[in-house]
Amino acid sequence: MKLLLATVGIVLSLPAAVIEGTVVNSTTGTPVGGVVVSFESAGKTAYQDTTNAFGLFRFEDVKPGNYTPDFSKDDFQISGQDAAVRRPFSVPAGSGTVRLEARLTPFGRVLGRVLDANGDPIADAELLLSGSRLALTGTPMRRASSRSMQLPGIIY
Image (cartoon, rainbow, N blue to C red; front, side, top):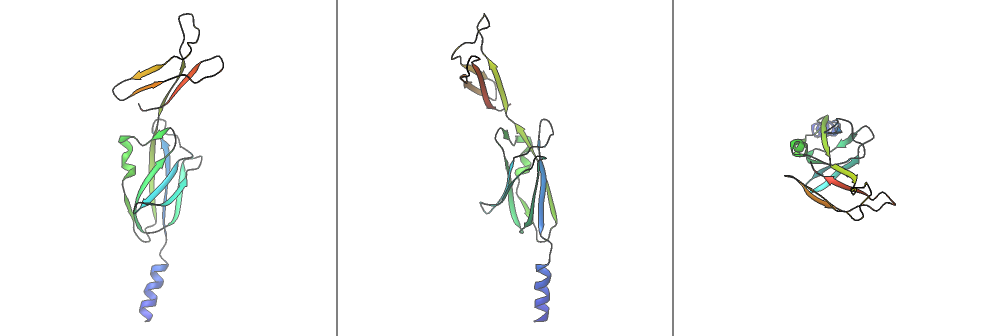
């Protein structure tokens, strides 16, 4: 009986695991704040938080188990070359600190105005971008006199 209680006491006193890391812009290397970082286990979100202004995140008291990380923020994606950060990993009991770095690629963005030969804005102009990896059309954003347009979410 004494041996059993001693063993249970040791298991309960093992240090809890910590998962921490950074999220950076893959193009500039600068930290990305406001990224939702989550870890799924058995198809459910087990842990979730948001990076701070320095792109840092930290989860304490992580239970042992298998986790799949996810990183999401509007206007960013995990590119194919950085997809390894989405691989599942295990956290053994009392494992200490697991360190991760995620690299998110910003979407491209086209901003501009369509002008006629006299330099005047063309009303209701349509823009078509095409290439081997994209095909996107857009219509102008209505702003007073500028007739500006924006095509967010372009993957380059």
